[in-house]
Image (cartoon, rainbow, N blue to C red; front, side, top):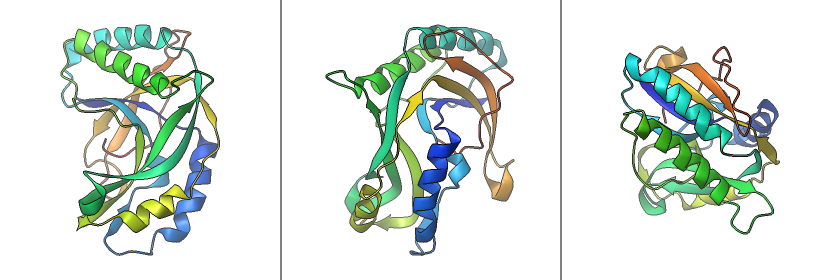
Length: 207
């Protein structure tokens, strides 16, 4: 199974972002915008999870969530992968908003806990530097994305409280218009330890 752990912003936050993006969708041919109901923040990506590892993964993610407390977050600040001058992916950043000295550590710690849970369950986790973001668009060819980053920098989202993480299974090519279909396999409340595998996450893009 192809899976990932994610933070999914609430509906009202996604609707506000969609209202900002919608007028810009037809502005540039090389851009392929992601769908609003697909936006999410990936914490840990697992390319292959076997059935016999799933129960342990679920247990360990629950424990990891218990160790973290809910915190406020906000979407804002544009960026590009692999870099601005020859961008292939356009994104909006996600940052924690707390009274702590280093508020971004909240997301970093949540990511570290999610990845550690997968590793302890015997599952390989995608490595690389963690940069909290929502993927907004992809370019058909590498381009200088400076002007698009300026556009995204104008967006400042409302604050919401991150209260849970979600384990998502990705079914490639089974969604609308050839997009992946995503199935929630567990929702884990921060600081509480509650797991509700019946919760259905929004349709999300490939992380």
